[in-house]
Length: 262
Image 1 (cartoon, one colour):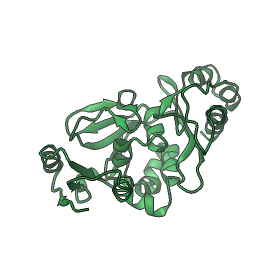
Image 2 (cartoon, helix red, strand yellow):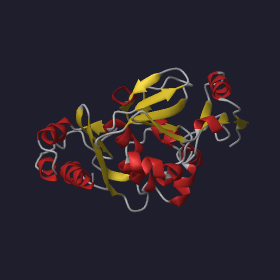
Image 3 (cartoon, helix red, strand yellow):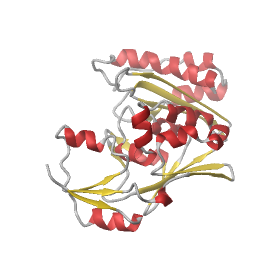
Image 4 (spheres, helix red, strand yellow):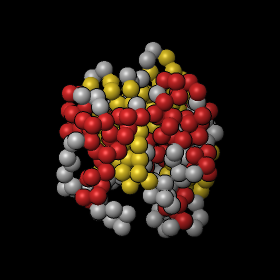
């Protein structure tokens, strides 16, 4: 297939290009989009490449908040000593995404915009109560993830950064599919000023919070409390990697391990 290619010189430049062509796609790390193109699942007329935008890269920590630029790679997040000191579970999560090639090309903004049902970052963003900043507005994590590969992003809207409040404690555990390293089930737990937040990826069509485990952890922040919660398998994924019942059983087990890791 053939397509036009444009190296964006600014976020405004990229936004104008993609809004002027409904068949254009934003290219971040390309770890999902290029695979979809190769498989014939996507056929964009144009690719707008954000890789040259330095202002979309980097990690800043101040006033109890971590801000990560949308084009920051998983490898950069994993390697940040400052982040490892502020939110070690987030650095740990980034370091276990895919393989080295994926981590050195994939970006946090690209992962969130794609919203793969088994991606790791959505669990951290939702559990930590992060805010997704775009070229137009700021979107709370609870309002961002809408469904299978669906987010609150409008057509042509571009993620610029993600800000995370620093929690009291946080932990991450995933049971991965060995070949892809995507989560069959992944659970991120966070003890925040507003209480416990627990987000699950890989188990459903989209990342989601499990309020039953949150309630248990608000009563007792222990691995035993998390693992004692029963999770219904209604609406969970059922595929060759694991049944809905299997995934339901994994959720409290991994939540307990994440609490212990925190």
